[in-house]
Image 1 (cartoon, rainbow, N blue to C red):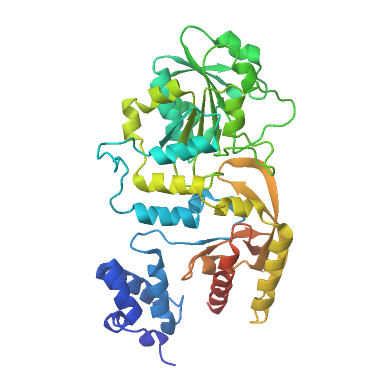
Image 2 (image 1 turned 90 degrees about the vertical axis):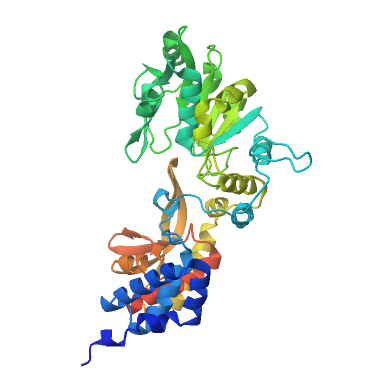
Length: 431
């Protein structure tokens, strides 16, 4: 038998393909040649057929110039940190594209003089949270809290419960971040119980503020007690609340998840949050609250180093003012409709001879939001070997392994991606 590798097309032949030639004009010849070589290597390794080399190269270029590749999130985790958390809405994506060129980000076109950076995005944020007198945006949620601590608590005390000194991911711990700003931490209470009296006993002339941190990626149950923001607000110092997940208002599916509007209404002086979690926007850190505190924080020299670019501002504003985000749609998805989609896809794929069935499954919010909340969902169940083939296919699909099967959960997969998902499964079956 002849070695099938001999059928792999030469590079010069592939580059004459119209699709690759057009891509070279858009992305540059070096990027296209790299994709061609990757596709050829997959064929040499037996991962794809020689006849699929050009299609694979075209698929590899679908992500554009950069090294990041678009994937289908079938993990059942709506806000998957390793997959970039929230998917931007169509409105936000369009806003980013429009903001990619010269914009009036710091210019008043009417007067021709310099204007406040991000003014329309900040106005949209205040409109969504009317209880906030002022707002500011930095490059992520941790940066928001670090900036507050640096501007308000350098060489001063931050009073915080021992049960809220959390690790936020990738080995970063909140106490380390706060201490790095020059602040001193006054730990009060115990891991499971902290009272208002504990905070009151620790407050002194060097207290900069009281900090409440939502333990967003774990739950403490049983014999527990925590002080309410309304009670802490009576103690004197400002109360800063880090809600983490970026929920701006109460959500019916997430009754235990703190939101900015409620915390400010209860007496919080400042609220910090992430923009790329439950808000469904780009990565950024939100600061909302009292005008004089936001002004002090936003004018600190560190604020310049932590500011966001015009693309983030554009995406944030479109998220706040535009239609339903993919995150909101995934949270609100009807389990019965998800199961119906799974059954339809399973029937189509089974007709192609693929070992697949529709099953009920459990999804989660993820991204450090709503720990312990389960979202009823539905999935395609495939043999475990499909997991690797799907991840490494022309259109990468990331699922999860459960009980020896590869599950492709539909909770975070928009219906318009169903056909792409089915085609990815068919290609994985051929491998």
